[in-house]
Image (cartoon, rainbow, N blue to C red; front, side, top):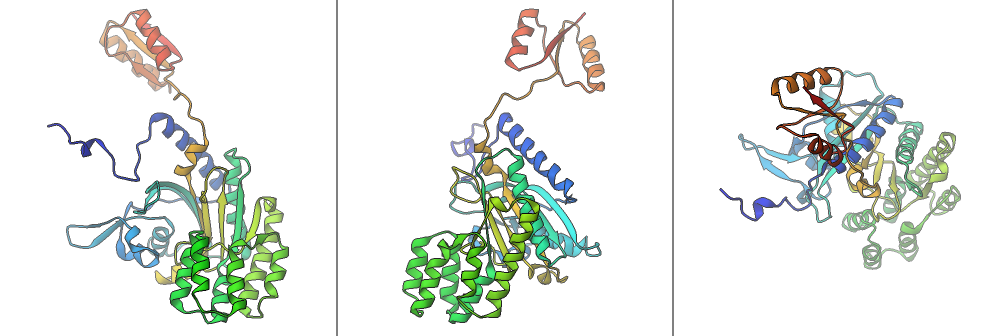
Length: 383
């Protein structure tokens, strides 16, 4: 039965990967995971499907989830990211672990949004069980080194703190509805939306001025002193001093030159509570690295633990790397006697060779042609 036109297509936002693309992606992933292991992070993997009850409470837009029903009528969803599933894993099978835990992953995530890609390959880390600024600095420095290790030039990381925005909202007594609108607009970098929301808010002029400045307030450590002049509220002061310590640690790690302070950063998942950061590479108008501190999430799973981490959107980085011919087999074995050909192939494979077996009788010219077409190193004729 012939497939319909729809049967020849793939769902919107998904994509096929050719051997050349897979080779690049797997090479990048292995390089990053090797770095993670050097920093003592251990790899874990969670199911592609989770119960909606696990991930839905912490997703800003419920309609961004791919949802299904199982045979018992319970709602399932494709994981939209790995932080929440790993929190579930740590809170159940790893509940008695020795904290802090350093975990890493490489897996696909799915988001039913309007962006170009709805299936993402992510690699990332979760550092669970430490509330120290040194932990924040560690994961940020690791993220910077991961991007640098891929050979990308002119990358830039921006670092902010959720406490500054929430402190301003608290001090100004901003209505919860307006705060949500502002937070969503800032997270999307929608400056028109931010301005519209602020102007219509009816907030005092000074507060409006600060909110309109926030998305453009970035630079070095000097901006933190200016923030302290805005308010005496303890929450803002604590956030500023926390950022100052993290920024100093990044200097010790040798990565501070690639990190700017940016007070307009807000994350799209509701669980972030402290320092947040993003990483950019030239030619891409969205962050390829996203991360931050989320100290309240584990309490929702019954074992309160501070935590911080990040994810690298590896699939989106593929466009930054040239594709080359896939590495061919070590040898093409051909001849006229199937028994002898099979025996020779098996013998070579037992030695660790990558072997392609001719599936019909070939002449030497045909074998040479296949060797060139498939980038095979050599040919071997079996008597």
